[in-house]
Image 1 (cartoon, helix red, strand yellow):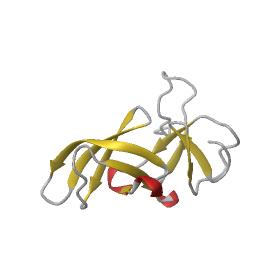
Image 2 (cartoon, rainbow, N blue to C red; image 1 turned 60 degrees about the vertical axis):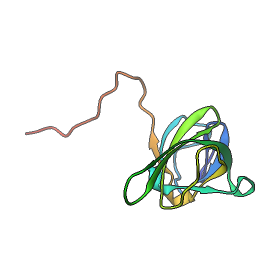
Image 3 (cartoon, rainbow, N blue to C red; image 1 turned 30 degrees about the vertical axis):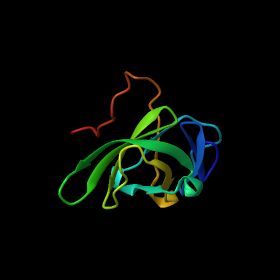
Length: 113
């Protein structure tokens, strides 16, 4: 988390609505596949290329290679394999969570008394 309202994802800055995590703090970022918009390269926050496409009956499931990582995208708009695309995410659709202190940290559960 760079600062309130701004997070770095794969080295690219994305606006978000979350606040209170502090400046330059490690966080986990969650974005649902249906909340990722594929747009023209000039309109995206991050650019990539469509590497896989499957029609799922209601939507297309696409994999986009961007920033050296694969993004899973669900959309009713078709972007053929090999298409150069921009990735855009509405700030409200980026969900920030505190990062666990260690990999061994478990979820805290309430006492059952």
